[in-house]
Structures are given as C-alpha cells and as structure tokens.
Image 1: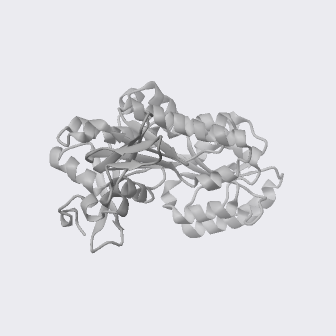
Image 2: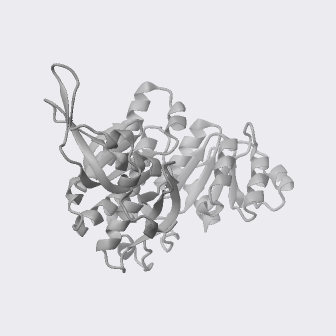
Image 3: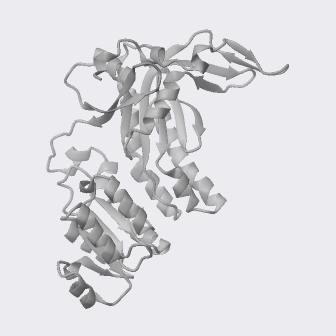
Length: 383
C-alpha cells in the first residue's frame, strides 16, 4: 500500500473503544473526578523505549543498581525532551511518553522540525548514557524512538497538576515503536503526511518506508517510515565534521576521524568482570560496543542483525554453550570476511594458530591487558 492509499487520518480509521466512546467527564468517587478535555486536539507525540530491558535488568540483580539504571536513562531522556519544548506525560516501565504542545498548529513547520530534531537528540544521547552506566558498572543499552501525529485527548485529575493522554494516536505510536531498529527512529504516516505537506522537497531528512502496521480493523494498514538524516559530505577537519566538542570527543580515534560513523564492535565474554573492563576501554576510546556474556545470544543477535553493522568482533575463547573457536566458524558461515580478535587468559598462542591457520598472531590478545595496548591492537584490526 502506498502513502496515498490513506485519505483520512489513521485515528479516524482505527478508532478503539476508549477513544470512540470517550466521555468528557468520569466520576471516580465523591472526592475525586477525572476530567477529559471537551475536545481532542491534534499533536505530535513521541515514545522512547529501551530495547530488551527485561533481559538486561534481570542481569543486574541489586535493587539499588536497578533504580540507578532506570534513573540514568529516564533523567537523561527527560532533560533532552524538555530542551525541545516537549511535555513529558509519564514513564511506563522503560518507556517515556511525551507530546509537543506547539504542534497544535499544523502549519507551524518549525514546531514539526523541532520534533524531528528532538528524536535525533534522544538517539545521540546514547553515548552519554552508556558512559554513565559503565561508570556504575551497569550494562549498556540501546533504545528506539517512535513519533506520530493525531488526535490526543488530555485528561487531568481534579486537584492535581497531572496530565495523561488517551486515544488511538497514543496506541499506534506505541505499536510502531516495536518496528524501530535499535538506536533508530520510526514515524507514522500521519506525521509523515503533515511534514510532506508543509516542507519543501529538498531537505535534510530521509524517510524510508519500512513496514505497514495492520490493526485487524477493516482493510486499512498504516505505513511506517524509518527516519534518518541525509549524509553530509565528509570533510577533513573534525570541527567541520562534528561542529562541537562533544562530537570531537565521540569521534576522536586516531586514524578513524575520516569515517562518517563510529566503528561498532561486538564483544563477547562470559566473565562479567572482564566484559565490563574491555567494554569500558572501548567506550572511552570512542567505539560503539554491543556486549554479550552469552556466546549463544551473541550469535543469535549477529544472525538477526545485518552482519555489516559490526566492524570487528572480540571474543573470549573458553566459554560455555559455544566456545570461541566454534563461534568463529559460525560467524564466518554468516559473513565470510568477518574480522575477529580473541581475548584469552590461556597461554596457548601457538596451538590456537595451528587450529585456526587463517588467524594472525596480532588477532590474539592475552588477558589481562593494559588499556593502551588493547586499544592499539583493536585499531590495527579495525582499519
């Protein structure tokens, strides 16, 4: 189905029981009343949600550490949203729901651009969030952002300065969030159509149709777009590339500042302490790291993800489930030219080279290893 197939806003097509029969006032008891606004208005809204948070939190254990884990993510996201004039409504588990009051005027292009820039700003905070998590020995995270536009009914509890949102736009924004890739942004067709109607054709944003969401109601499906920036021409100086001290720090890896993205590394080690130390080394050096303590989970992730996503794989050798040698052969079956380093406490370099003749000695790292030497080896193998 093409975007033009939908001629009415989707909130009119996918009316749910809540939004279809929403009263203007519901009495809760003799002392409290919930008031719905007399009329719904159109707004942009966003949802940001941690990927696989249940699995991640299950590895933390300590309740204080769990609170710190969520606090770092939520506080960073809320501060970012407020900078872009968003009104944060609530947190739901690992997700944050907000809307943008300025978008009530559907002709205000500046307000809609502000929403898109806010989405990018949230994703760009991942490096900061993961550094804060690593400082407290907490696992790194990925998250996803969804945005849409449509009717939202605001509700307020009598006597309290607290708002909530209801309506099918909220429901759809939550559904399409699951279609976003890790550290990606998706927007719904209603928001896309508004932006198309008021924005000139030449712009800095790219909208790629990635999926359709079917609600099970009637014959209509809802088009979903992956939002990205148009790549800018890469220049030779860090200042013109990134434009800020934060950008320079993030990309300041010797010999890598000529590339247009951060090198990404898949790190696997069943020893949590070793995993934390190596991940911290890599993150502080400016690399983007996805880490696993389970070799089986790492393999499953690698198969399900575009293998070209990763510039390098670093793996322990002695691991349960799938050892490093087995993992190496399985990864090569997926991507024949996969780049891999082995980090091991075993002093068996010659035996390893005999077992894997296509492996070079510089692909072996003896643990424990000093940070400078470790990063030097990684750089040599990633370029």
